[in-house]
Length: 294
Image 1: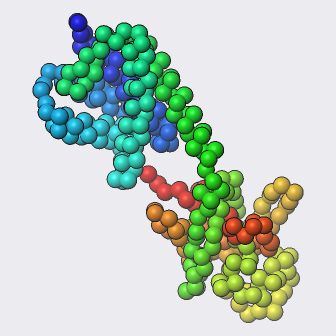
Image 2: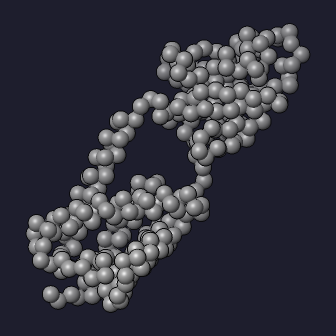
Image 3: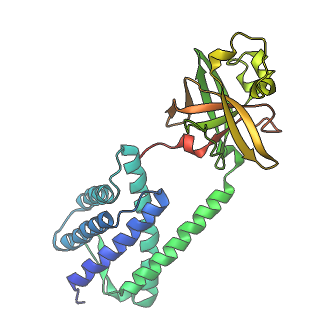
């Protein structure tokens, strides 16, 4: 079989670019075409070089891992190790899916046109086979993502948040509400909506029992009202287009999960009612509060 290295290089660059592009979309990383192209070129050159050198199985495995790290680093430049590991895993997931679909097509078309050199599969297959395989791979990944998303239980949308205020702490069960984009109008800080009954250890009961009076500007007989530095937070929701929440700024909040996210730029909005009929949660937290810079 005659192998044209320029064709192999071009096909590898094209396939690597498609894989990196799909990886960027899945991991929600900003796509930078030049970096993707540079990374794809590096991967293509690796495929050519390994065709001419002889490596043991272990050497080949170690080299593949190192090359994968460099490819992901060039393409996405993750700043933390956990993001690097996540994107390498996604890179391999997409590679296996795309590659499997492409070689499945090629196997049924012209299997004799595939050869293996030092663990690298190459052949005289047309680029359109790789592109069709990439399309099939994309459909597979999207389908799996939809199935997994549909099977996510309501429990997976829950988290626990600790609210620290004036030397006290209160832990509340929160539901992650992707539609909660509420912000304090002046500081633009994200608002966490919490049932008033869950704040009894942090806020005086006289205040909690007189939320409507405070919002409407009526005086209540408590000396602590000014120490809270309350904020008035307007909001709109289905059936309530001109709502108002009474809010206060905690010292900081901590999301209890593997990342242990700590935020000191949030506001607690006191909700005078029930958020869950089944008492599954007593707070609503927006997805923005759970974000961490990559």
